[in-house]
Length: 197
Image (tube, rainbow, N blue to C red; front, side, top):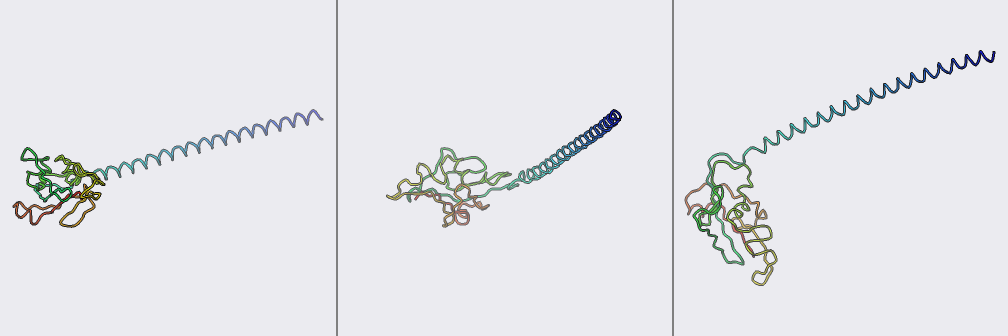
């Protein structure tokens, strides 16, 4: 009888082992299926996020590729440069100082002309000074740097537009003044003074 119980017990143990193996296999199969689902949904989520980001960049790029100004233009602004109260003569050897977009004609008038301006920074005061070869930053004007003496006191770069100090400095965009008569330009267009004082 011990032998029969043993056989029977062994049979039951093997049956339990098979059931456990079957459960383990089922559990592994479910686990693999869940892992595959998780990977599938993660990849799908990443694809959707990339598509949304791509659409955002595309729309943003289209907006940013819109020109600042489109159409024929010829604007003016008056400019002067002074160091310690002494006005500097800004002259060049030719009649066109700068590039066609922003230049002067040895007349202390900024001429902005063309057909299209992609970014407004292209017509900023800083770009104009770069194009005519005059050093102008927040800390330097020509050969003077903030802290250099001016009438015995430390000087500083300043921008004055129409009599009021303007903190935009290089980033200042002159107003769109399309007057063509030089005497009217002097009266009615921006009066820009870049000073070291």
